[in-house]
Length: 304
Image (cartoon, rainbow, N blue to C red; front, side):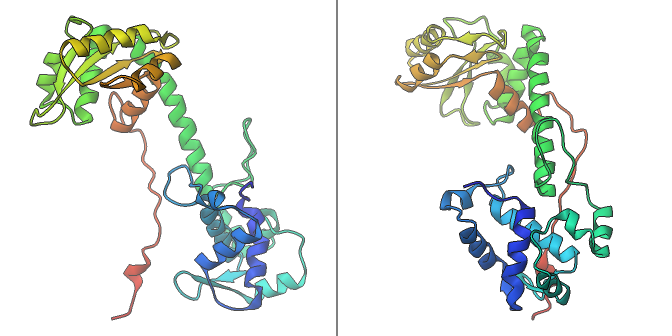
């Protein structure tokens, strides 16, 4: 079942509150989930950031917009109820309530002056029924995807020595090796027997990881022979752990091969390499930071 957008939820939510009682928000989410015939899997779908269930988030925004229009109010934390204006609206028996409908209320119009418009369409999708958080997250993912694509090309165009330096910095950020100096010493060697370097798995040097770092065309797919060669080099050194890092891609047989061998071999292709570089800030600088804040109701508690 498709999870309804927050504007579709507005009228059912207002009708739910139409009995005049004070409703607990979490219970209302459950009731609306049943009304929309959403499955357990539907209700467990998270927003892109993974911080909240998508349907819960959308019900929350529907409530917020109805509150801004003066149709709902929050008598206490986690609860809501209908207002007189809300009762009057239900008496009109509206067919639907959406953002355009809510503009009949001055308080909602005033609210929208300070909110980003969520009814713009781009060439890829209709975003009229996305919450502001979803629009922001979609824009973030679009920027991140574009950055990853550009970053991979930039990395590929660097010299082999520069690529090795990036690998060193990334491995350090991931917590491997005792120091950057050690990583710089062991990564970027001549490739003795299919091995480019050896690093300590932790600061104490309790175990070692063997590295293969290859700067190849991002469109190339690495087959199982290259991985077999690397696994053979590990076997020759009685090693159990290895990481193959490349700007290229891995063909399905290569990934399937590592699943059936005794050693633990991790394959990091160009896409994952750039994802890790973005996550750990390697070769990047922060341009802008947006903070999304929410009310800490506990700080306003007056109970002893």
